[in-house]
Length: 131
Image (tube, rainbow, N blue to C red):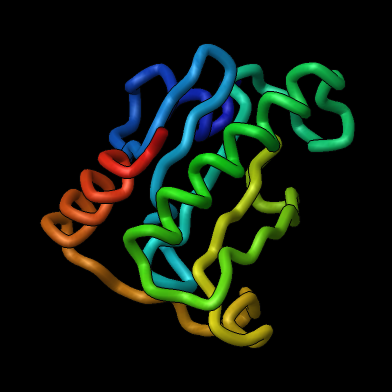
């Protein structure tokens, strides 16, 4: 069975898309720790990040860097934090989280709530800054 992320890539489940390349896909996390919290995934379904073949891994990280720059341009923050946990969905993914302090990366914190219009506007602004 396809992972939820594969179903998002295939358009079976809607998302707030930021960017897409031949091998990677980025979209807003719908349970964000911060405004602009974005997930970056390889299109190829691989469960564990360190099982991703080298060329795709490099593409993923390069793509994530470009997405992070776009998020940083739109969302005021000190940095874009990067984390890979990989337990919640069996599809490799990178979290890009706008942060101002280390505690902003604590996944035990309550998640933020945004309306559909807010998500759509934010995704469009970040996508417009993706190069």
